[in-house]
Amino acid sequence: MPAPVLRFSDFAPKRAEYSLLVSDMPGHGVQTIGVLLLDPATDTLHLRLRRDWEVVAADEDAEVLEELEDDLAMQARERGGAAVLDFLESVASQSIRLTEREAVTVRNFDKTLGDLYREHVPTQVQRFKTHLPRYSLAVAAGPFLSNEENITAEEWVEVPADLPIDEHMFIAEIRGESMEPRIPNGSLCVFRRNVVGSRNGRLVLVRNSELADDNQYTVKRYKSEKRTTEDGFVQTRIRLESLNPEYPSWDLDPEEGKYQIIAEFVCVLE
Image (tube, rainbow, N blue to C red; front, side):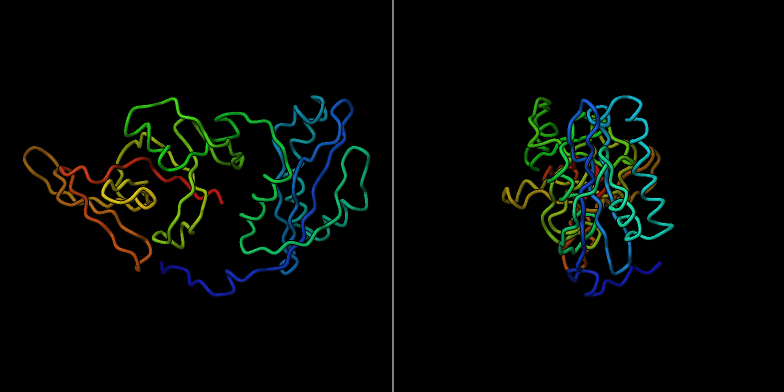
């Protein structure tokens, strides 16, 4: 399958509107519970609601609120994003209401939605249930390089509900263009330590000890070539590949110790 062709329009800024969804439940006070971001050009509604409903409402109300994001998303697909916002604005109640729409310029709707969510929606951190730790790359590499487990996160970041997480996972920001377009420069990415099974074909976080601190961490695709011997398989070549053809790939010498595989890439968070 040929790679998708990226057009300038894919990166051009777009006009959009966003509103905050606010609740005022008995005994819990006024709380911001979500962000709704409308792309007027396509009438698409991007939305993200919090998941710690026990902080927002009593048990019976929390059960209803748990279904709200899926319900709004379904209505937006069926009726269009603008119609859903119009409806919410017209039926505002004391318990749930929508703030006035505000204009925003967007290049990437997922990233903007995430930025707005973190800015406006305070959530209760549930470690390795709804949130993952964010580290600098040098700190993230620490447990691998020194077997030090007690490291402090810069912050705990809430991840999408459909991303299964565990205690081997963390978030770090990737700088550089060698893995574009799959991993844009400046992306927050999710990684998993303790890679299980074959690394061949996977994207991995690599440390090159010969480079300066700012440049020694990067993501590459791990490719391994093998041949069969009487004793089994022997690796004849290990290559760390850039996805962007304008950037070099590296051959790895297992005996040299120049490169260390820190973790496996899971996904771009935003």
